Length: 220
Image (cartoon, rainbow, N blue to C red; front, top):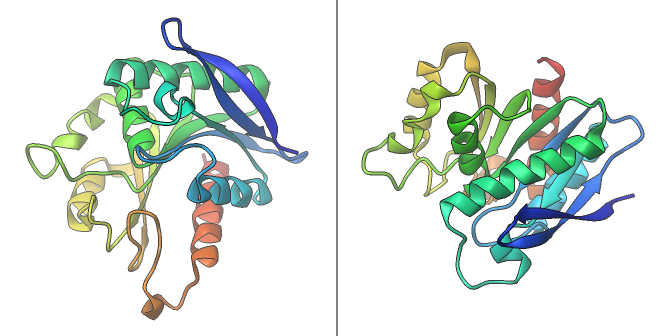
């Protein structure tokens, strides 16, 4: 059963909410952050969490201070990174001896990589769902910190994602050799909705994301 928790995001911002969902047969725990315009109860994050649990992966979903209060604009980068670190520490307390991984959708995946590049996190790897590679000063500016990351990374990317040029992602991942794995979902957009010609339903895509994540974690 999912369990609701609280933890201190930062001393200045105070408490935020989290949801821990840990199956009896859990083999690892993934700290799963939401995208910039949503929250931990958004259907994509909730459905991903459910699918990961079915794969034997525990999940720790969490809020940022801005999503906890329900809006008002994004927190600054310093607060976002501090919240990720606090979420990982809280998850570590709850996970006991489970291997710990972290990441999330879009912004949370990106911010987790930035946090790791700044100072090593107590995790074994990073999982990014729709890493937003577009938006920097250059085509791969948002990957400039990747050389400072020694941990393994898994990137789930759609070919129709307007925030992530798939060719740029392929190039970035290829430079990282065995430290990065790219899993491509044909015709998927930033929220992993796919075109009818893909032959897949959204539910099937979510299950594929979860299964691929579980297999990658098991192979670590």
